[in-house]
Amino acid sequence: MAIDANEQIEKFQAFFDEEYKHQINDSLIAGKKFIIIDFFDLSKYDHELAEELLEQPDETIKAAEIAIAQSDLNAQMRVRIKNLPESQKCFIRNLRSTHLDKFICIEGLIRQASDVRPKVVSARFECPSCNNVITILQTDIKFREPHRCSCGRNGHFKLLSKELIDAQRVVLEELSHALDSGGQPRKLAVFIREDLVDPRMEKRTTPGTNVRVTGVLT
Image (cartoon, one colour):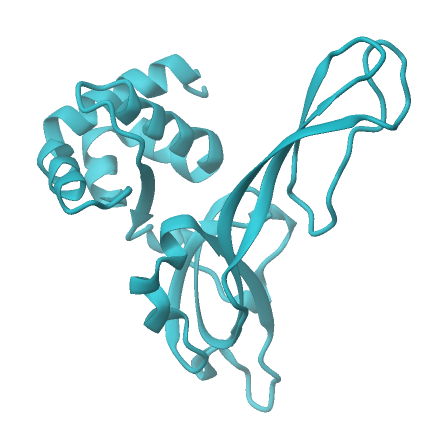
């Protein structure tokens, strides 16, 4: 049975207080806006919460970040996860619909890397007819606008604001040991953002670099 959001937040607050308080403090002192959690630390502390992380990664990581924000530290930090179990590791050529929205780990060679550019992640619109404010998450390459308001209005909404982050697109190519004899390497586009495109991370996204990527397949 899935854990509800409030229970997830409470569990993460206890986990951070007992297991990661010093690491979070050290990250804050160093000026970092993220904390890296070892999956096996979480699994050892609360196996059920760790399973939720694998099956519902976006919601569970959000709960972890809220837990930090609501703690005595009152800090806004991104939560990053390392050392996923072997069950979550996959070759690019074996990715299927069953992997969608799941936490996975892939290895590959960076073939291409775009420049870091601002990316819109959400936008707020106002309906001229009723002044209702509509928020649209920007998950596609093309900028999305609302089609219809609850009052019945169709189109022509006023853009109020955009939320921007720094983002980069890299293309991963399968490593040679993943190929069948004579097989052509498969490729996968990966989007990285915020602290992952910090100038200190630049060497890790240089074309020709072997990397291990942990993330959510969408």
